[in-house]
Every structure is written in C-alpha cells, then in structure tokens.
Length: 114
Image (cartoon, rainbow, N blue to C red; front, side):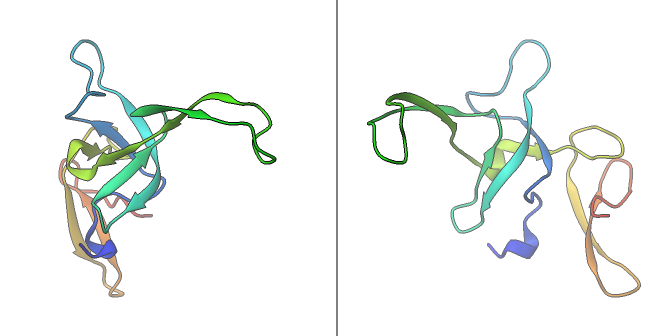
C-alpha cells in the first residue's frame, strides 16, 4: 500500500474501533500516531496496545526490569479523528486548485491537512 494513499499519518489523532483496546463501556480510547508502517499496514499509537518486556541491564539501559512500550495496531482497527469536528470519520481525498492532494473529512467536508 503506497504511503500517499494511507488515511492515517504520523501525528494524527485516532480512535480505536476494534481489538483489545476498544472500550466497551465509556468513551473509546484515543491517541496520537507515533509511527506508521505502510508495508505491514500497522501503526503505533501513544498509550495504546501497551506491551511489557523484560530487559537486562546493559550500558545503554542502566535499570533492568519490565519496560512498557506501545505495540503496533493494524490500521483497520483505528479511525481518524477529524481535528475540526472532533469526531471519528472516514477519509476522502481531493486535489486542490494548485494540484496538491489533501485528505478530507467525510462528516464536515473540511480539509484534514492544513
């Protein structure tokens, strides 16, 4: 999947719609995208899909123990949150008059890329 066709980019706010981090009660979990891997169709979201890993003490890591870090989530399990209407939305694509391609919110119709 080419990276220019992805609906989610680094720095976007996303909401989890499927998987273990989807909240059944209360508001769904949200977070900022830290990293995008278009080859595997996965993203890393800050504060979601926390994985625990035991690490040994090395010269780089002074403190041994269990380290928590966010793990990858499949891109189909999240939905982009529109910055203008603050709602999870599907994403459309449109070309501007100057020829630049931008992402468009399907709910409010405004450009996501500023």
